[in-house]
Length: 382
Image (cartoon, rainbow, N blue to C red; front, side, top):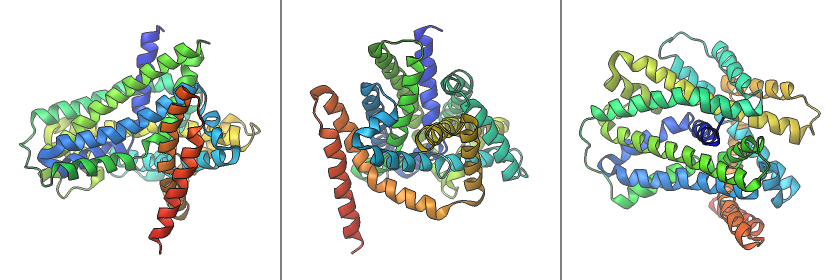
């Protein structure tokens, strides 16, 4: 495969890694709220929902290392604890389980009587097969699954905007719309995923070449392709939310995509909405299963646990969480991650500065911002 095709494949893979269950909903919700001011909503979402993950990917790419090496500058045990919290919430005890639930909801549009448990087992097993080999994750996503996902999204956006009703006037000042959308993009916490996804892309390019500079440039090009695709979809989805806001007024968030599809695609609505939702969840679930299983095998078990066993344990935990939920654990990890997230943003930005100026600002930045966040949180409880 030529390098341009490899870059395009990796870029497609990055897009599908990020575009999961939440990304189907939040941009449409921003448009629904912003109405005629949705341009400000787009700007706020792009700055936080695209800008922050790009900073994280650039930061890891500049160091040319995997996430473990990158994070260990904070210290071995703090890095291990942070990676466990991040991957647990991104994987089996958070986003991964949500992917199963949302995918089930998408497929249930066509088969309403489909039970959750057998669906979760089959769907999760399919994701695990793709996740089995590292290279297959990138190439399976980029060459096989993402093109179909993009077709479904493109059909929804193009036909939806062609038939879209007029947009109602903006209900709030531009600054309020921008701020609300910026915070929504921030709350996606895609910077966490960026730390791990960019390392996956680095290893993909490093397999066929030993030149660190070329690996960095190819990885950066792939990240820009993925970010551009994600930005275009965000713009389209925010616009759809603004145009179809009256029709979505009493619609639950998980039904936004089917509702818009039904309005603009007619008889094709349910199949396209169902496949799009399922593929968006599958592509994200594949990489999340792979990442948590790798962490379980390499970092927690010291390579004593076979790869197959790590994948099966990850799959079982994901299905169990989707089936019965681990509310207390998820709430605890979520609170810890909320407190750590500003420090991780500071760490990513300072790491880029460190790389160019050979300073050691990143470690100080992380701990100072974390202590500040803990102080603010403690004050709020008084």
